[in-house]
Image (cartoon, rainbow, N blue to C red; front, side, top):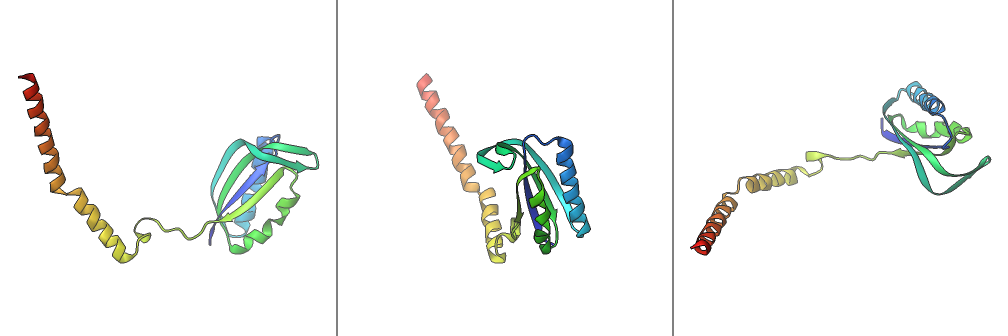
Amino acid sequence: MPLYDCMLLLKPNVTKEALMDLASRLGQHVYRRNGVLTDLKSFGTVQLGYGIKKLDGRYYQGQLMQMTMMTPPSFNSELYYLNKEDRLLRWLLVKHREMKFGMEFFGEDDAKSELRSFRSNLYDDENIEEDEDDDDDDDEQSGTKEG
């Protein structure tokens, strides 16, 4: 199942109880479709770049919430009921693309050469000797200034 982020922008005057009610209803909908809710974040009240006009007025602030979930691909078409939700200003469902981390990011040959270069840079003796020589030069210069 792919990973999705559902961004919810609610009206600023919505109570926390109503916000949690909406989040729990959406979470129950995910579980009924054999999905998993992996993360829930609330960003609090945010300033909007432009006003969003609704039947009861124009809103320049909103409460932003992010729900991360793993659901079947058909889940997107099942969220039509959010359009009728009067507490919501906007909602958006974003699919996470295949992302590679760590060694998967490099090809197999690239990964080996990258590790070799890292290892050689880590244990490079030439840099250490140069640093020691520089320290000796500084000591000699400071000694001549004193005398």
